[in-house]
Every structure is written in C-alpha cells, then in structure tokens.
Image (cartoon, rainbow, N blue to C red; front, side, top):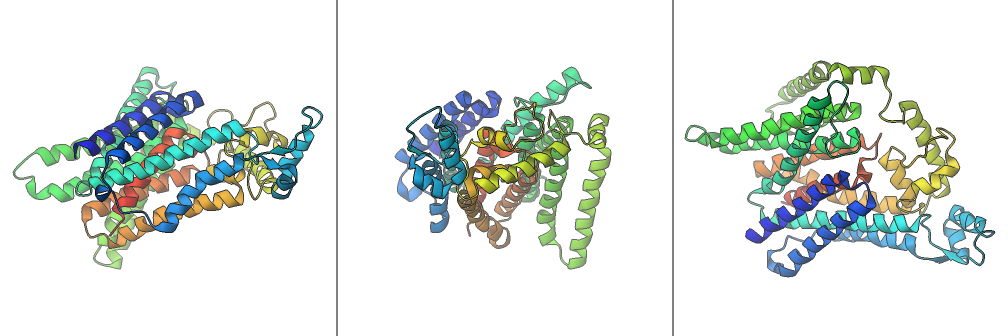
Length: 442
C-alpha cells in the first residue's frame, strides 16, 4: 500500500501548490499544477499492474467523459468558412468582420479565443485525470475508504485556519479568504468539504463506539474531525459570503437527512427528524452569523462590483450570447472575448464571467458540448445514488452521503457564482467525484 499512499500524498501536494498560487486563477500558475497531475498519473499507471486496478467505469460513461476533451479539440480545428457558417453563423460573422484588417482568411476554429480554449482544454484533462486517479486510489483503499478524503480535510483545515488568522488580524474591517482572491470562492471550497468532515466524525463514532471503553483514541479522532468541521463552518461564516453560508446550511440539512432519514423506523420518526434538522439549520441561520454578515443579507448587495440586480442583467445578456452560439458555443474560455457585443449593463466594467456556471458552460460549449457535460455528470452520479440504497457497508454509505452533500453545495453555489471556473475548486470536485464513483459500486 506504500505506492498508492505516496501517490495520494503527491496528488494532495499538487492541490496545495495550486491553492498556494491563488487557487490557480492565473494561467501561468495553473499550468504547473496540470503538469504535476499529469506526471503523477503517468507514473502511477505505468507502474501499477492491471490486476490491481479498479473496475472499469460503465462503458457509455467512460466514452462520454473522454468525448469532452475531444469536443474541445474539435472547437479548435480550423474549419473552412463555408462549413463554419453552417455550424456557427455568429462565429463566421466575426471572421468576415476581420476582412478589412486581415485579408485572405478562409478558415477559422469555432473557438473565439483559441489560446484560452486550448488552456481550458488541458485543464479539463487535468480534472479528468484527477477523477480517474482518485477512483483508482479509492479502489486500493476500499477497506479504508476515508483515507482518500483525509488529504482534502487537512487542506481545508489549513485554508480555514489561514482565513481565520486574516479575520483576527483585521476584524471587523476584513473577511477571511484564505489563499483565494475572492471570499465567495474560498467559501465555495470549504462548503464542499464541510459535509465530508461532519459525516466522517459520525462514521468514526459508529464504527468504533464499541472500543470507547477500552481506548480514548476513537474519541480523540472524533473530536479532531468535528473540530475541523466546526472550523470550516466558522471560516465560511467569517468569509462574509452570503451564498456560502446559505449553501453550507443547505448541504448540512441534506447530509443530515440522508444520514438519519433512511435509518428511521417509521415515516413519523422520519418526519420528526427532518423537521428537527430543518429547525436546527434555521437556528444556525438566525443566531450564528455576525453583524457584518447580517448587514450583507440586509443590503443584498453582492461582493465586489457585481450587485444582485446586475447579475440578473448579466444572465439575461448571456442568454443572447447562447442564442447566437447555441449549438457549438464560443469555445471554452471565450466568454469574456464574446460577451462585449451583448453587454448593455456595467459598461465601465469588463465582464469576465457570467456569474452562473451553468449559463457560462452552455455559452462556451453550446448545446452539444453542454449535453456531453451533463451526460458525464449523470453517469457519475448514477452509481452514487444507487450506492446510497444498495451499499451494505455503513462506513462506505456514510462516505457517499458526505459526497452527495458536497455535490449539493457546489451545485447550489454555481447558480450565482463561477466556482467551477476556479481550477482548485473544480479539482476538488473532481477528487470528490472520484471518491464517490468507486465507493458507489456494489
């Protein structure tokens, strides 16, 4: 088990490196992390015998996952102008408009910004490699499934600690953001790890409660893990991210419902337990946030220069972009370059993101690419949902519950932000998806 453990540590260090470099938001920083992940994967698969590898993922899911980078490569292919006009009239218009500046252009790719499309294409390969590598490592640690989650919790603990140090140094005129450039993305990372920390403590309690009378070690483990969960929640609160706080409570409610609901002896007990969980989440929402966060909810103004009303206008304008590039999109990373044509609001501000992951991926991938993305996500989630019902090992079932809580958190937050365009956050999501995929097997 030494080789898988070394591989897991190396992958965790690559994530730490990305977080140290401001979560990889600058391409020059993120490229090194993609190279690290690629090298780790190559070494692992080269030296690992086939008989030790995890069961292959369902055929159609595997094909859909690998179709995504192929589709991104297709967006980069130079196409004759006539074919380009048939596939993407709006893109062809841009090429024709360049005629007075660049003469003799007879072909162009679907991607409006090819260099960014290439960068995000390799980034997508990094996410896929992370998913499959963690899935393999999860198979090697199938008897100790939480081993693959521990590095994430350690990293989350360190990030939350940095955030709270920032808060203590400048409160009340600052908020925690860790190594991130934005508090919302900082909270987006922590809210994915919070359900895992909460459920991990409960799993230890369930698995080792018969040994409490003979040893204090299980109690110490539970205290450490739940202490980490408490730190994550406090750091989310003091990041002053409204959506981060709201999403954290929603994910905790879903996690609690999946933990206890199926184990209730009757429907009445289940209803009472869910009601108590909802009341508990409501109590945290009312009594936990500091005055600064309450004030942010009261004024309902978003962080930075993008207000809540402005977000609605951005989404409406993004729909116009989607309508013109509906089938094949404007290319990954091409939103900023394309959106200027449709931008009627905040004209003094250059809009880089749609502040809605779903709309932006739809704009950049088109219906075809977005359909592949959704199919891949559904294919990964199917065994997770089945595993919640079929897996008999309570330890693994609880791990799946924590993963579902993480998915709920990032899915909700992505409606109003672009957490999945923060490379470190997307890599963490791929990591959790790999853990869930292998532990959802019967």
